[in-house]
Image (tube, rainbow, N blue to C red; front, side):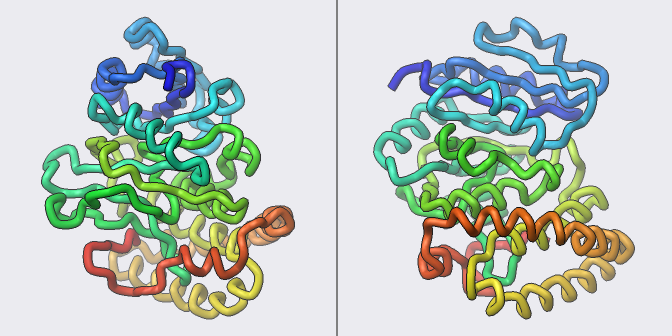
Length: 326
């Protein structure tokens, strides 16, 4: 392995309170990336003060909030390395994080994406997540969220549905081949959508058990139950399903998907977010023509069999060690 193999992309939006620590953690990596591309989505150019903090740091200023998906695509278009690592500005990797990810990538050429073990920064006895799971109903969840690290952290690498993009490594060519992130998503669920498309293209995903980061979570966008997070998460949930669920699975799972959406409207209403839920589902339905057009392109290029996709989906509603992210 060499330092020239990987580019790290960080997307900043209102995260200046955690970003310096994130950069310092990258500066302490045992294997240094060729380049760190920091996409500053703020309208104030707040990241300019960090210029020169690391010798391999380059700042791309957008002067407006493009969203997580579009900002990553902007940096991805300038990536020349074989591998690209995504890191949230509120994620703090341990010194061997990048080296462990690249070692796993070389051991597993069948995989195009690699996830990290994420710990709660305020209490590293708890897991923030151990890879993302996709339920056949269309629900997305982070495995082992808020579960004790000593009981639920895997002891070896394991195949997962997709990595959480807060701290993940991707094969650049594979990422570009499937079109990168879907910019219509703006944020939330876009990493699961990307992971689903990579699986449809015939690639596996691996959770690397010794690639560890500490994660604050929602440092920029607020609590996961904020109106902003609820709207985007519940709108994008529909688009992930419509675009990616292949063949007969789409029609078999569609009634369950519709039921799940209806039930989630009631869940959000009980939280006082009924109007947010209705707006999210309304906009999801209005976006169905675009999602269906994307589906046609995605499914026409599918290499994985329906059985392979079904095998990778989560079937259990209640899983020991797992927590639905609603």
